[in-house]
Length: 259
Ligand code: COA
Image 1: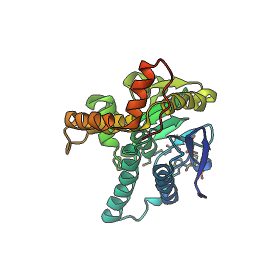
Image 2 (image 1 turned 90 degrees about the vertical axis):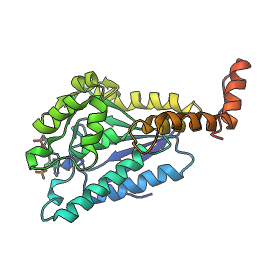
Image 3 (image 1 turned 90 degrees about the horizontal axis):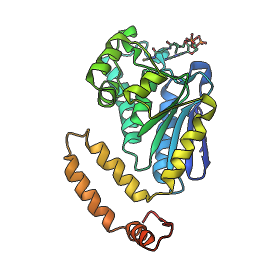
């Protein structure tokens, strides 16, 4: 597909989505949302795509937030509709059955931090900086940031970041559990791809069940333990489960089909 504000690349089952407005530090404007939404739909629908990387173009920023130039003149209803639009796209990422990982290559501020947090996990480069600077603008996060930051780094640390607008560097992000790895910028995509290649070798339906069950922790409409039991049962009736257990017993590598 052709997009105006993102680039997509497909290799070895991994789709890399690059937010591509480097002169505006990849700020999320309406067109980025349109393109990202369509790209995630493609991820849902294209069986060849097994896993996804989201990153930003250029050496400086992952995404420096929502595009502030589009805020002017919005009334309350329009502002709420904008937040709902962002939340819906980020829920679509969070609930994707295929792993979606953020490779944070610089500033991840405001909506950029929120986008990274909607991904299933995150790696970052040594120059990355994370923050929710909305209070500088008389705002709060609108794309799930108050919720996911609290889930990921705990209430005290999240409250401080939200209320102070302070940025944290890559090493603090690692210490707080916001990212899983910090690597030199030039190694970021390769490190992310190596993790996804490993995941791509596992049983896809079981990987999807991991996402579903782990997401249930934070979904008050579900009992996560009950979700785990039903997902465990679902795995038992897959061909991949038969293949995985047979391969183990026969001391050979499993060949999973995602069935
Ligand atoms: N929305 C719209 N444009 C943005 C943007 C955003 N969130 N973040 C950066 N830009 C634009 C700048 O306006 C500038 O455009 P210009 O060259 O046409 O003037 C360009 O991107 C480069 O940014 P600049 O501020 O010159 O870079 P810097 O290195 O001096 O500062 C930041 C980098 C990230 C600290 C700074 O850009 C910033 O604070 N951005 C806003 C972050 C924010 O508040 N995000 C939350 C939004 S709700």
